[in-house]
Length: 233
Image (tube, rainbow, N blue to C red; front, side, top):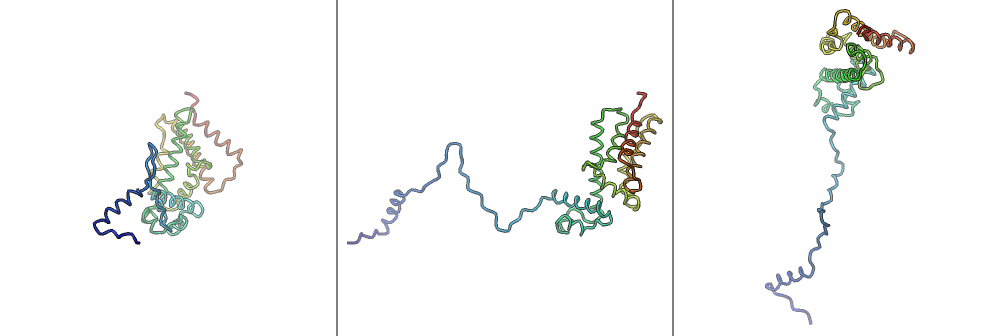
């Protein structure tokens, strides 16, 4: 004999009884813990966009590499975008045109050079009056420290020699490194000679016409250094 079928009035009670026999199972949480749902997996093919600061740094590095390898004239928006692995539109989000890109490259290079000089001055323990001239000497000829950006600076200065517009735009911030020290004339002139000698070494490397042996070069640098120390103090 089949079981009687409950009428409509009896069905809610039957469901409640069933729920009581089979309560929902909840995850057990130990004291101090909170249940956290597992993170959803990212959609297939989704890519995380690069941060604008990272893209800008990549673009300046690409411009620096191209300028060092091929000269400032080779720094074009298309070449830099391709080297950095970004679209031209992404490049123009940061730099509207080539001049803006070159200005930013100059600014970055000069900031790094200045930071290098400041670090050398802070670490200098010799005659304080000649610390700035010594910092200029070693920051100018240093080819081992990436912070000095010496190779890039050489290329940019070479462009200043041949392009009056570039020279006009970027000569002013460079003058503060070579201005005379606030010292009596004889001392100030001696330190200026040291800076000019450093420029001579730097430009000879830039143009490649001087072939000094390592021993001769080191001795020239040592003699310039000695000139920056005031023996009468």
